Image 1 (cartoon, rainbow, N blue to C red):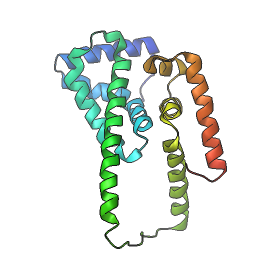
Image 2: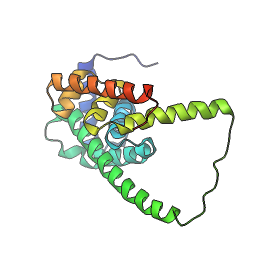
Image 3: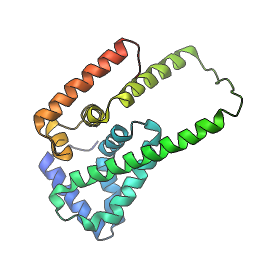
Length: 193
């Protein structure tokens, strides 16, 4: 098990990894992905609201980070830079996916429907509850969904969220309170959207 490092040393190490990436050292990319992959996934999910897109978008984000590592003008701001890459890639992917689903919706209306396969009852109930919770998070307005996912799924501090999103700390706090309230309302009422 890896010993946690103080935040300052971890950020210094991540800056060194970015510098190594800019020199073309692929091992640095692998390590940066290992260290920062979980929160990048959180940003992607928060921005696109679709768990099914996260893996593909994450690959795209790391490829962009690899290609653009040498363009980062202020290495101290690497976290905001990576956040921006992840956020914009996720928004773009969500737009593409919406267009694709619209087309598939038209096509599926022309085909007969088939029943879904059935599994053990307890797995079905658990899967439905999980999907219901994901849909509730996905249904949050982006304004609230992004800080919620960063805080509760990626473990970011309020300050990290405020810095990455270029928002005042009290705005982040307010958005998180509203996101939690909306989720409670939706889930306690049995609604999803």
